Image 1 (tube, rainbow, N blue to C red):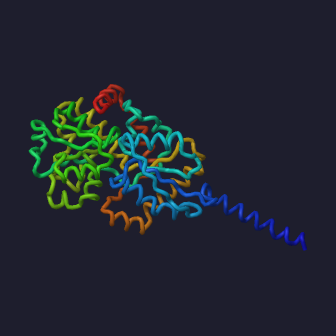
Image 2 (image 1 turned 180 degrees about the horizontal axis):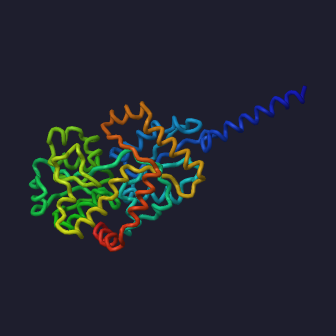
Image 3 (image 1 turned 90 degrees about the vertical axis):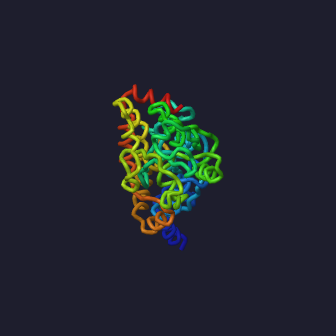
Length: 335
C-alpha cells in the first residue's frame, strides 16, 4: 500500500516540479515588477501601466503585475536600478526615457548604466517630439522663437523636455527659458494651464494622450516637430531638421533627436539567461498583438507602432557608433 502511494506521489511531484519550471521566475507566486522611471500621470506612466495590465497574460504562470513608479533624474534612477540592482531572473522590467539611452554616451550626470549591455525588450511606439506654446504666449512660430523668450517646463536630465530646448538654444539660437523641478509632463501641462510656464517640448503621443483637445482644437500653437522624420499627423508643422543652416547643425540635430526612434523603451537587467530574455521579449511581442491591449491603447488615445527588442538593440548600436566630435558637442550642450 505504502509503495503504491509512493508510486503515485512520485509522478505527482514530478508534474508539480515541471509546472513550476514552466512558470519560470513566477513559479512561487512571485509578481512581475514593472518599474516606471517617472511619477504618475505622464506619458511614460501611462505606457508602463497599460503594458503591465496585459503582458502578464503572455508570461508563464500568468503572474500579477506590480507597477512601481521610480522617478528621479529623468529616469536615470530607474535605469540604474534595473541595470545594477533588479533581479536577473525575468521578474523585473521597466520603462525608461528614450533620451536616457543617450545619457551614458553624452556623459550625463546620474547615467550609471550601459545601454549596450542592458536588455532591450521592445517599444510600443516610435515618437515625434513637439514644442508647443499656449495661445497667449508671444511665441507663435519658429521665427518668433529666434527673437522672443519662451518659458518651458523641464522634467529633468535625460528627458527631451530639457535636452531639446537647451541644445537648440546653442545650435540654432532659439530663446527657450527652462524652468526645472517638474516630476512629469502632466505637471508641466498643469503649470501651462495655470499660466506658470508658456510651453513644453514633449512627445506628440503624450500631449494627445493627456490633453486630447489641445492640438485638435488649436488650444496651443505647434512651434515645430522633431524626430527621425516628420509625422504625417502634423504635416504642416515645421520639421526642426529643416531649420538647420549648415551641415554641422544638421549632424548635431540628427544625433540630438536619434532617441525618438527608441520610442517608449521597455528594458530589463543585463546578463540575463537567454531563455529569460526570450520569455520577456516574446511576451512583449504577443502583447503588442493582443486585441484587448490594442483596445486599451486606443482608449488611452495612444499611438501603437511597436518595434522589437532586437530592433531597439540594433538602433542603440548604430547611435553609439556616431562620430565622437558630434557626441561630445551635443553632450556638452545638454548637460
